[in-house]
Structure formats: structure tokens, C-alpha cells
Length: 222
Image (cartoon, rainbow, N blue to C red; front, side, top):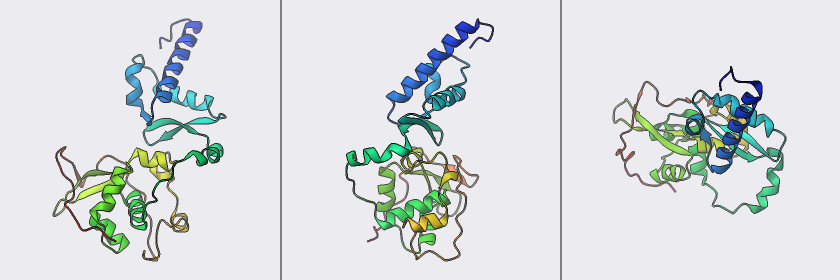
């Protein structure tokens, strides 16, 4: 905005920008990043400030503006979520293998299949990883700079959105995970949950080529 413009004009421009941001968020079924919103606003607009303003405006309403990773989305207020549960369609629950694999990836990312198996103590079939990727919660990040150049896996913004997390550092602690049944008694008693790496690529990772098929086939676990 032009700071030299009359106050009335600045206020009108601000209201217009807020309405545009609000409309874009309502129209999107997925969280929007600042880069997704920028093309619709004038150059130099403080999009983070606009998002915070919309968030504050909706703070006490039935829907709230929440941050999920790098994205923003309108979601039902947490205290009203119970009203919508009866409308949810029944979905097939994840197997214990898938839940454990998802939890390990979330906390140990970037993680290779071999590293996941080391934590779980059993083989992890490709079908389990495929299931988590099809759900949109896990993605192939890159390839580790180590013998065999194994694929590394990490979580997505959709994972954060589904579990109501703003960032990976909001993940629950080890005791909470065990209480929820996400980690089984097979895990070592001295296991420490590390802080997951929340970046694009680490120094020991190379980017995936678009044609990279990822991990090879493997037998699925029972």
C-alpha cells in the first residue's frame, strides 16, 4: 500500500486486500501458502500481516483460520468439532504397521526404509509406505548420500492439517504416542524421540529426479 495515500484510502485498500485473502482461503480445499496468495494481491502487500488479521477476525467464530506448515486454511473451531463427527464417512483404519511407520517417519524424518525397520524391529513392506503416500501424509523427500542411495521419507503439510498441527514441533511426546497406541511395546525402552528435521533437504540428501521410481518392490508385511 502507498503510505502517502490518505488514511481513508489506505483503509479501503486494506479492506479490499483482506476480502481477497478471505475469499481465496474459502475457495480453496487445501491450505494456501503465501506464494499461492501473492499473485492475487498488489506487489509489496504484507501477506503474513493480512493472514494474521483474518485469523484474529475469525478467532471467536465457528471456523478459525489456522496455520498448517507453510499453509493457511479455514477449519472448524476445535471446540465444535464434535458436531461434525456424525457426518464423517467411515474410513478403513490404518493398520498397526502403517501407524507405527507413520509415527516413526514423523519423528525421525528424513528416514529411509532401513532406518524405519531399525526402529520398528521388523521389515516394512513397500505397500505400507505406498498407503501412507496415497493418503497424502508421507512423501519421498530425496535420496541419502550413502551406499545404495536409499530414498528418504518425510511428512507433508496434509499430515499436519489432518492431525491439527501447525508445525512438526507440535507433535506429541513419547508417552502420549504410546498412550494412543501409535508406538508398540516392541520399541526399545530407552528410545528417545528426536526433533524431526523440518527442512526441504539435508546436506546428506540429494533431490529426486522427476522420473525416479523411488524404492524398488518389496514383500508386504502381514
